[in-house]
Image (cartoon, rainbow, N blue to C red):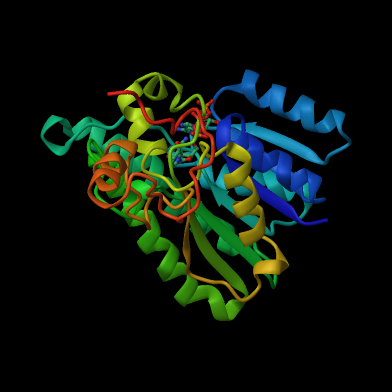
Length: 280
Ligand SMILES: NC(=O)c1ccc[n+]([C@@H]2O[C@H](COP(=O)([O-])OP(=O)(O)OC[C@H]3O[C@@H](n4cnc5c(N)ncnc54)[C@H](OP(=O)(O)O)[C@@H]3O)[C@@H](O)[C@H]2O)c1
């Protein structure tokens, strides 16, 4: 049975990834700080007959990589997959970011994944995968990105280096870059109507992304189905970062100029509460 080490496995994207991996028959070692949340994750997955274990660690601690990888080897005797997912949100723009915050973001979302990769490389067998959880805020400029964007951009560059350096040794390295996904990290931001609209109205998809959307992408990049994919940063964002999808307000202006029935596709717009043009 293949074995995956997933950081931040007790919540949000990491928890959904742990669920997806055990459903695919992969044993999971979950890492996070809060032992209570880890126990809940372990209880849920073990209840479904999964091979699962967890270790409470701050991944940014100096001894975390050796302890996490050592624990996986001790429990399951091998390591095949690393998912560097642990992270936090709510960054500030550069001029509002003090050194302590900068060091914290870089330490958690760049230094820790770097050091975990280094440790995992020593433990991997002939074929293995690394998936780093980046962000669309590393692909384009995002307001308030600051230290968060810097860390995730570095994580993308690390992913490409790993692909080049270790691909010939059977280790594939890729990243996923989620758009805004409702999780405990983003719930409070999504209460802000402007923030919701910035994401939903400017995305061709007619719904928000889910943790399962991201988990399935991580599973795919960790599976033989993606065996010839190495060094990619895969956006999981409904097209937000790769299209210039126009908000409903901008579309209304376009319609007025071109044709009252105008839509992107030429077909009548699909009914969507989120997209319903507001009366002016
Ligand atoms: N949600 C989004 O919209 C979104 C978009 C793009 C990228 N991402 C990225 O996706 C990843 C997961 O985010 P999420 O939205 O799923 O957040 P979440 O629900 O808040 O989960 C974060 C996880 O990371 C763990 N964690 C945080 N700090 C840690 C530390 N120092 N050591 C060990 N574990 C730690 C948390 O557990 P403990 O608190 O118990 O440690 C928790 O398990 C992050 O890297 C985030 O940047 C999220």
